[in-house]
Amino acid sequence: MQETTGAVPEYPGDDGVTDDFGLAGVPDAFQRLWTPHRMAYIKGGQHQFKNVDDCPFCVAPEREDDDSLIVYRGRTSYVVLNLFPYNPGHLLVCPYRHIPDYTDLTVEETAEFAELTQTAMRVLRKVANPTGFNLGMNQGVTGGAGIAGHLHQHVVPRWGGDGNFFPIIAQTKAITQTLGEVRQQVAEAWPQTTAGATDAE
Image 1 (cartoon, rainbow, N blue to C red):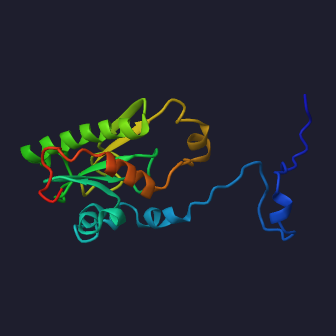
Image 2 (image 1 turned 90 degrees about the vertical axis):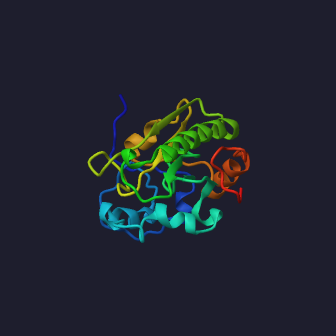
Image 3 (image 1 turned 90 degrees about the horizontal axis):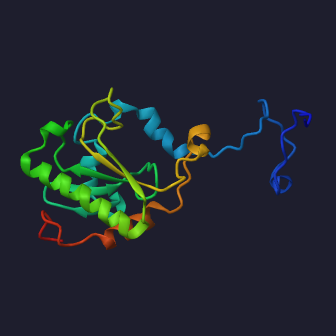
């Protein structure tokens, strides 16, 4: 059995980017992946989106598709990339109306919502070849909804081995493409014959 000395392992190239300035703390064997951009979301919490004026799902359709990461606009609902994806290609299907619950959808909205979810799966299969999907809606704060005030359905593509130790142990997810690249691929592959498309499509 190898004896441990408690020394922090050295990584190739560390000497070239590390000075001799010491900071407080106890060294350990973990490397850090810093994600300060998520702090605005974390600090704001559930109560940062109180109404349609500050709801990101209400504001997104008012912007250009590239800026808001929208991949498709229908009559009653639209499809947008998740800004904080679980996997590359993680899409959200959202109604334009600011409603919190699945039962608040009209019959027409429900039909298009379901159709856009199916089309999202087909498009993701075409552009990314996932071997499975997670589909779901978290209803209400206690149900785990990140933005409980505006209904949205997750369409998460899955591949064998994508649930490795990194997200579980390090609470970090490695995403292999930029959101802009994924948005462009999905938008270009989206069929323009989807029922419910706006006349502008």
